Image 1: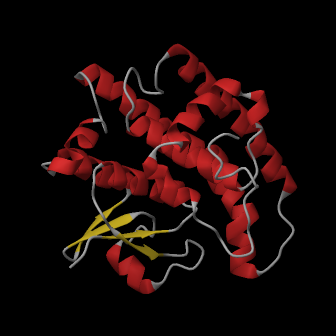
Image 2: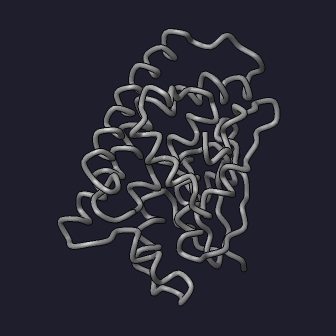
Image 3: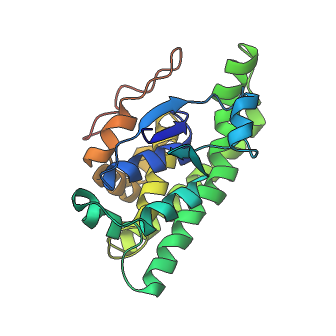
Length: 230
C-alpha cells in the first residue's frame, strides 16, 4: 500500500508535512480532506478530526507533531539521509530551540492568525456559501499577523535560520503558515524586509514547488504568490 498523506492544500500543518516529506526524500500520494466537511470515515481514522494524517501500510500517524517525529526517527533512506538530519539539527539544546520555534508557529501563530483567517475567508464560504466575513475577527488577525512577522524579522536578523544556525523544521513550519497567509493576500511584505528575505530562501527550495502550485477553485492567490523574486 502506498504512503498517503491526508491533507488540505491550504492547511498550514499539512503543508509543513508535505515539505518535510519532500526534504526527506519520501514520496506520498495526496488525498484531500475538506476541514469544513469532515466525514465519519475520516473520524474513524483520526477521532480528533484534524490534519494532516500520514497513512503507512494502513496505519495512521495523526497530527503534525507525531508525523514529523516519525520522520526524524525513521532510519533514513540514502536519498533523504542529510535532509532527515536537518529536521532537528544540532546539539540537544539547539534541537530544543528549533522545536520551540516550530511550536510557536504550529500552535500560537495558527491560533492567533491562520485558523480565524481561513475560517472567515475560505472555510465558512465553502461550507455555507458566500457570507459576509466577520470584519472584527479579520482585523484582530491582521494585527496579530504583524506581531508575528515582527518576530520572524527579529529571529531572521539574529540568526542564520529561525531555529538557529541550521535550517530545520522550525523554518518549514513558519514558512508553511506564511505561505497560506500569502495565498490569502494578507502579508504586507514591504513592511517586513527581513522576514521577506528569509521567506524567499525557503520559497526557493525545491520542496516548496508543490505547495506553491496549489490552487483552490474560486480563490486565487496574488500574482506574485509563486514568484521567487517578489
